[in-house]
Each structure stands twice: as structure tokens, then as C-alpha cells.
Amino acid sequence: MHYVKMLIDRRLHGKEPDGHPCHQLLPIKFDSPGLSVKIVQCSFLSEGAGCSIIRIRDTDGEYEDELHNYVDHNNMKGECSIIKISKNRYLATVMNNNCELAQILSRSGCFLTSAKPEDDNLIYWDLFAPNKTYINNLITQMKERGYGVKKLISTEYTEDMSLTDRQEEVIRYAFDNGYYEVPKRINLDDLSERFGISKSTVSVIIRDAEKKLITYCLTSSDGHYDKR
Image (cartoon, rainbow, N blue to C red; front, top):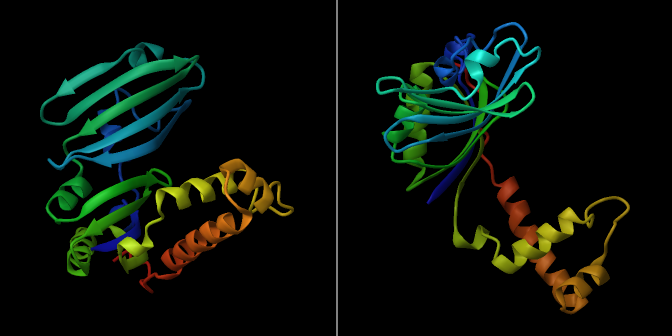
């Protein structure tokens, strides 16, 4: 099994598009004056449709009539539903049937586990594939269409690279509670008391988890960013 993390520029050949494809299903233009539109999460369906959660702020309340409880179902383009979550703030869920990236992915044989937007142009993907050839073919197809692609991590994924449930529990608690801060807010004694195990056992759990995480981070490709 091969794993890759990549950064994708949705702008074809590096040029500004007419907004994110999911913007096209909103009832108003995403760049309208007084409107703030931010895609907070993307996902893809096996059928090649793109899905997004979009946060909308109508600064002066100018677009309330268009946004409030908006629902639209278009079999050709997709679906859009908008709810008001607070004064002048809305949340839209969109399923876009015309997302080309989703269609390329659906034909690739690769498995997307995470899609996190950096902004409306850049998006991070975490992918698994049976082998590196699948990944390379996917990247080739995206570049041929004009998308920019940068591989951040590309490595063979093995069971040895996964944290055990116990390792993840301990190291996540340690991180969240200041073990890695300077100065530390908690130490090994605190962790030992929290989990009811010896100080030496906590130390081994953290050391083994850190080794896996560092190996994972350092095992990366030397791919360069290519807008082609």
C-alpha cells in the first residue's frame, strides 16, 4: 500500500478560475460585495461528485432573502442547502456533479482519506493506493488537465507506521496538555499518574510513538511543485 500527501492548485494552468466549482451552486455570486465565502471542508463521492461545506458571512445582511433556508436540487448540476446559524452567518452544504477533480479521482483507483482546503484555490489531499503507479497515473492526469500538484509525502505505508490505540491516546493527551511546550506544562510523572502506569512505561510509549511519527514525516519524496 502506498501513501501520499499532496497539495493541489485547483487553478487550471495557474490561472484564477471562476471560483471553486461548488461556488457555482450558491444562489449568489461568491465574490459579491459585502459577502465572505470560505470553503471549510471538501470531500468526494465514488460517483465523481464533489461535496463541500461552505461558511458564508453576509456582513450587512444584504443577501438574507437569497440565503435564508435556501434549498435547490438540480439533477444536472447538483444540490445546495443553506441554513442560518447566527446573525448574518450561514452554512451551506453543496454536492457538485461537475467537479472535475472528483471525476479524475473516481477513475484513478486511489482512495482519498482527507481533503482539507488551504483556501479556495489550494487543497491538501491524503491518498492511499495499491502501489505508487496508481499515484503517479493520478498525478499525470491532473497535470495534463492543468492542475498544479506538489507531493509533500510519498511513501510505502506499513502497519509498523501506525500508532497503536494506546500510543495515540498517550501522545495525544501529552500534546494537548503541554508536554511538548517550553517550559513543559506536564511531565512524565504527571502522565504516569494520569494513565495509572509506571513512569518508565510512559517513556517507552512516547518514545516509540515519536519514532513512528518522525519516520512518517521524514520519509518523503523530493517531488517539486509543478503547475505545468
